Image 1: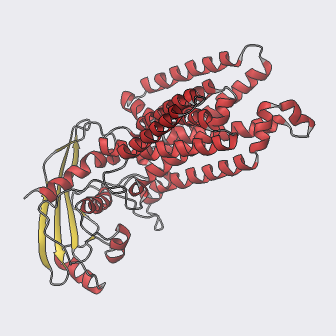
Image 2: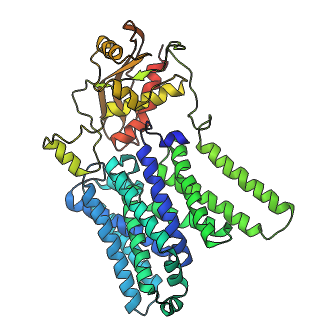
Image 3: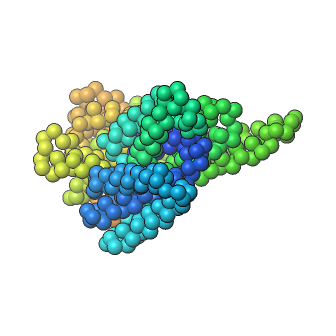
Length: 488
């Protein structure tokens, strides 16, 4: 599954972002379980979702890349920490059980989410995006922010883990040795609120709650000590997150629920093993073997057939390129008349480009994404391919034609064929029904400028479940290259 984290993989940011959310939630979830705050783990993500829905309604933006992202993030943070503050005040001043307040918060937050979405013109589409999260749309800026927040949370968690543990289980003893439990509680709730707020924005409330609960439950069933439970919870969360994305990618399923389902499977196996762990002899060994076999089966389902590589495909109409050197996939040309940019999640970058900021980069586009997909699809056909970074270093701009590509390749001393791509149409009809695209491919030998192969994809591709351009590329990308490479 290492190909999922490679720089050339189109959705590497989504995999990395989901992994970060899973790790920090699983570690903090140990305390959520041990302090019997599971219901709080449900209510706070729902409160964050209500804050996001309120931000959408107030700003008139949908839950898409580059649209009201900072406003939605602010809504998630304000709603999460506001709900947490209200619960803490109610717990300190009230006489009723904490479950009453948390249950009321969960009901109100759920109702608020639905109502804010109902009065918004985008309605059901927005609610679907909100619940699914926007992992597929996470940009570099958001990934850096998430990584920085995760690193800070892990550092604080590691430095003050003993204080949080002592305040959780023996606050009176903590006071006698000069450790104020209220400070440790405040730090724990700060970490929890931050993790939930960012997690709801990137992965959705379902994924946040799933990883707050399921990996810690599995770890606490098996780990002999608390330190081992933290390590095991992180390992289960990492495996479920990356493995779930791999399964979803190959089976065309939503990534978040698939990852939660894998984490749930790990918990069920751990629960079964925990019930029978006290028995002796062959039964324990047999169950351990079954657990290992089940884990291997999950990894086998999640990984492609050839270990870390996707399943190989026939060469199709491609010529035999043995001995010609690796193929360089040049940047694709956009001849559609539309920019087809993949919006950044940071609206400041979008504003800078709109204002003509000379330091703002051009941003990624659909042709850029298709170039990366072409590298993957050629690799699946056992064709030796240069990385996208190497190709872009040789071809800073899309070649105008075969002659231009040949001239630039000869100047760079390139050994190996060059694949040129021209996108002439890319239109999604209706509510995501069909993608009408025309992609022309050309394989050129830079030694003499001869054309080795031509291919074209022009048949419509169904993309009924796609809501963003990123999802359109997930659904339609492999089909487009299958048409081009396999058409005789």
